[in-house]
Image (cartoon, rainbow, N blue to C red; front, side, top):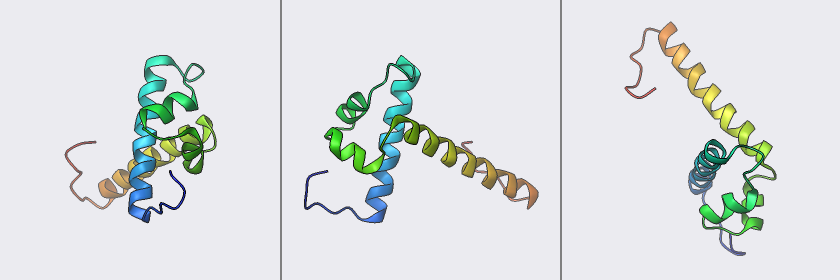
Length: 90
């Protein structure tokens, strides 16, 4: 992100989510090894250095994505245990 621009925590979270979505799409299409941080940055319409402000490596992106998915699964398990209705889209 350009110097001097400060994102709110909500904007940062949304941007991280967008980056992860782009990275996962590229990895699904090209494989992990053939996906570069440059490609991710280009599709996210940001400079590579700005991407590194969010994630230092592809591994970090993958770990973040897995952590978020695990959080969703754990939340769903808690809802099942508590007999709460599940959201429509799993």
